Image (cartoon, rainbow, N blue to C red):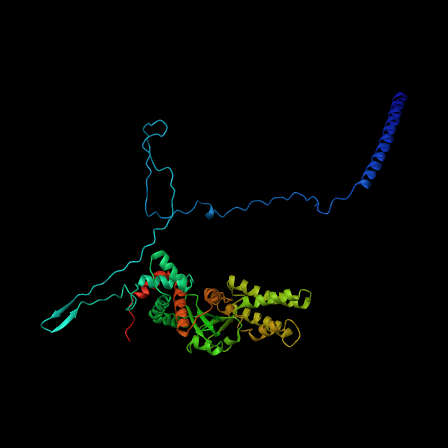
Length: 450
């Protein structure tokens, strides 16, 4: 029970607290008024002053793959130099337990070899019994190119510099003079390349015939000027590594048919160029990457057109289903054949949606889906066939770069030489063989007797 004295004490304490609260409120009111007055007098910051940004939280450092956590790869040394340590460099005392403490490799090149001129002297003698002169047999097949003075190593190097490294003729001439001291004319360089192409004619035909027999063949073409006139370089490429190129003046479909041959029965993978519409033999696969690239451009050109965006998304979804099927093997519940029919029905439906709408932006690609619905799905029914023409695109790219450097060729023989050398070098590289060594081996092989 609260006494009167305790109650009086509580009343006094309550009154004191109320007084302190009233004083605090007055001080707070004066402080807020002062702050408002100062804010009103404050001038805004200059336009060039940027607002404070919150500190950016650093993302955790991405760990490297375990196979990359090693030191620089050491080369196989061709020579070793030992730097001995006999005595202590500080006190001169004898050292024990001497061993190799550190290794440092210096990778360098030997001095360029000067041109080597070998004079072959064939002796000649008179036979009194036969009554005629006889001369020692001189067979330089392994050393010289034909009856010329230049050796096979020079010819192989020139072919490699021209075809693989894509050096201009005069740059090759300057390289041979500056590095090896070999002085030859521009005409001699050109003649040497032509001799190499003649020597490799049979090998190039073998590459073409082998490519025609492959189950999957990629084809593409690019422009190639000859003596100032337009023309085209036609390419066949296979997953096994064959690369065959021919130069023709025309871009008509008859060239593609002749390139494949009448007996072609494989699957041809190309873009949507009309010259491949009537190719002979087996099946056809059109490049999905070309189609997706055009779909991307269509979507970017009509960002505000909802119907176009929806249609583009639906076509891309069909390709996503194709990719999923190619990465996941079919099961008994979902075999490949019913899937092909469903995908073909989807392509037919998407193509029919705008194939008759003449002014609709989707019409050109809708027509492509409608017309090539069968040739877009060969990659589903045959797992060996890729959905893109990447093999041909990558194979023809070096030839495009060579054309941009040289501008083309000046004669039909020059075009033939260029196409043959490229067919050889590109095939060797695609099959993991070194073109320089293969050119040398080719020149040391005698030509077949006709």
